[in-house]
Amino acid sequence: MTGEARLSLLDGFALACAEGTVDVPRTLQRLLAFLGLRGRASRAHAIGVLWPESDEQRALGSLRTALWRLHQLGAPVVAAQGETLRLHDWVRVDVDDLVLSAKTAAVGDEPPDVLDLRMGGLRELLPGWFDDWVLIERERLRQLYLHTMERLAANELRQGKYGEAVESTLAAMRAEPLRETPHRLLLEIHLAEGNYSEALNTYHSYRVLLRRELGVGPSPEMQRLLHEADRADYLPSAG
Image (cartoon, rainbow, N blue to C red):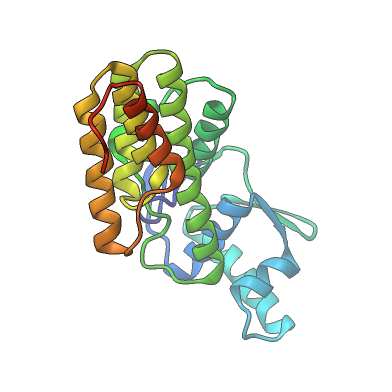
């Protein structure tokens, strides 16, 4: 393998290089995915996570075999430096792109892949994998995506970019329909635009959804937004 390689973990595992896609067996996928998510790890930590039911010597043997098999596959993407394991610098990981987008949005800038984030929606980390370390990372990335889209929407709302704000809000809403934050943002966007009937519809639709699914109502904060508009004579009573 020469040049840049790309390790994809979102929506499924894939390893690609200039020569094409590498067919990596599942047992080796776990090592690459673990390093792709952790960045680097000691041999002791890696074997404890990946081969928890094996004794230390057997697990170390399994690790050595995995590294050897990766070389045999033409995929020498793991750098082993003493007790430390990591992916080579020329291996790009798609999860890192999502994290970078989140950091960009956190400082108020628009990520370069904002359209992909909006239109592509929430992408699941390694679907069908149920290792504890995968489940934890999957939830972390889900929350990261939601907060990124909500932060983008809030920034766009402040800048008066209402159309973009709606798109970012709807992306978060599609990812987690019961989450209040995007519904509250959508209500704020409608109010900022002067679309008061749409704001009222947003509130009532979310209230019905919560009652049906969870048996609760919107938060006092969301109710306050609507009631403030009522007091300003913008809207009829929310009921």
